[in-house]
Image: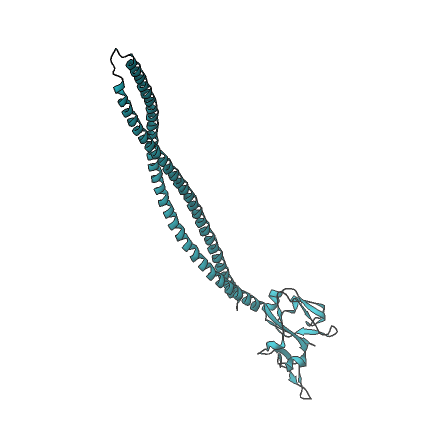
Length: 316
């Protein structure tokens, strides 16, 4: 797979990850909006409960006022009864002038009547003041009750509207969460795909062996050369085989493996594959491209492995 295709898939994966993050932000905003509406609903509910308490208190005041009205009515009945008693005493007022005892009795009756009438008038005046104040209170209560009822109706309408809005946003949040779950699954799949692609793109193979071993493992082939006196080909060149068995190689990650050990530090080696010997460091290099040492170190992994994923090193 080409590096351009890898980058393209990586960009697609990044786009999905960004979409996931954006959706998550949208999910957070929707939940915050729903929480705000819930707070508004709670506030309005508290206000409604307060008004209902006020209405209940007003109702209690109204009940007390009605009790006072009943009491005032009973008082009026008492006044009527008292007047009837006073009228009954009027027969004692008229006496003859010669009857001294009758005059005394009449004077006493008159004084009793006047006293009773004075007391009744005082009590009646007090009751009249109470009734007048009661009438004013009831008028105020009727006005307050009407305003409170109107406000309460408005609050109920607002609460109903808020409740519907919250239900709508709850559905939106549920939908967003479902989308986020789907995106999470897709993101996990893409992440695994990107990781697999990354591993595959950076996977390399190397093998170090003798000429005979590499030929026996069918990793290299001999090309060219001429036959000598003993019918042996001379000047043959080793080249990588057309078909390579990966199980014969050591697998590595080109980003991590920068040093490759050599079996024998006293023997010269050279690279059979197309890799550039100029991109490695060794304890000793020779003019023909051979090298010696305990290991070789790759100085530029990207350029070095660009030639081939299969590195073949042969012992000379």
